[in-house]
Length: 156
Image (cartoon, rainbow, N blue to C red; front, side):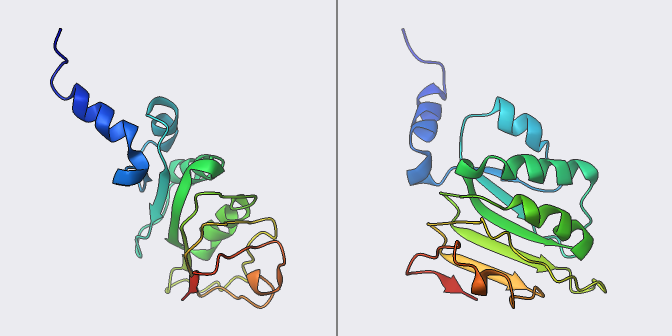
């Protein structure tokens, strides 16, 4: 019996997701809830970096749902108005064992510069890249003893 075309390729891709860096990308207008429930268990990338784009209530719900899958989140990239970011950052708490990069930024056009603080419970032992733009660090990660950086982390 022969395999259907593409079956062996599918097994190769799904059998080696970390080597191939295969992941689910969550972005504007994408049905994140359906993807997380009905797709293979792969790492997740949150990519909402549209400078002039607003997120919808569905996008916001999808981001929160994806952040609840802490063990799957590899990259978080959020650029949005402060009011949206203020709702989402509290969900970035607990341990994210696969998190490789974290980029958070207010839209530069955002007049509301909110003193945003990362949750004190945030831990990311694999974090290599941290980019925080227009975010006050005075009482955030700089003074938080629970936040662990590996030696090779670059704070930009």
